[in-house]
Image (cartoon, rainbow, N blue to C red; front, side, top):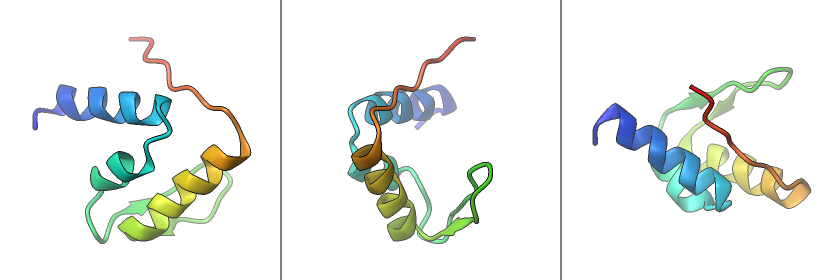
Length: 65
C-alpha cells in the first residue's frame, strides 16, 4: 500500500470508528504514543485504545493539507 493509501485508509477507518481496520494498519509490536498518555505497546493494546476512545467520545479526523 502506498503512503497516501495508508493515510486514506486510516482516516476513513477512524471516521467510521473501525477499530479492526485501524489496528490492522499497525505492526504487531508497534508503539502508539498519544500526547499526555503513556505509550501503548502492541497491536492488540492499540486496538483496545481506539475501541475505548470511540466508546467515550465522537471523534472525527480531518485532513487539512
